View 1 (tube, rainbow, N blue to C red):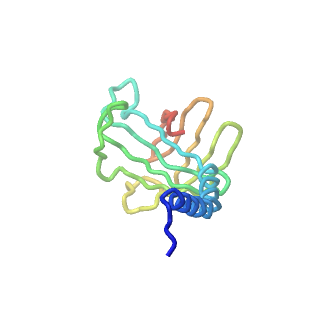
View 2: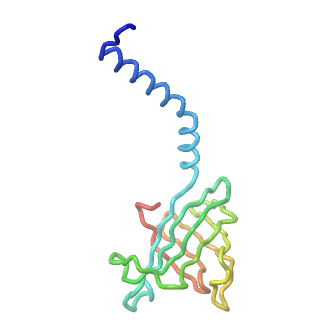
Length: 158
């Protein structure tokens, strides 16, 4: 049996690792391309609105794919003021939103969606959600829980 030197063995291992990595490139590029077409969204606002002191934070976060017109968003109200938000969400006030349509109009992104779990809605609350994201102002205006809410976009989440 032929003896393999350590240097040749390391070259062989490195070569096989490179071949394995190259084999995964097409699937990796497809994944990266798909993630670039979607837009991550994170916006928050204090509740109640100014001039009253905020005791809770309304957070809208998730992603939308403007090309496909799909996405998932979550609307949650957390205890604590903006900037000092806790991880405690108020029970019954989280809404999971399935995006059904996305339109790009100038610098605005108009998102239409529907609340996934309708059993958690308040009696006067509509399951239909409409959100307008204004990239110039850095705001997201949404009609959620029967109220019009203006949230400030998080630059790291956008």
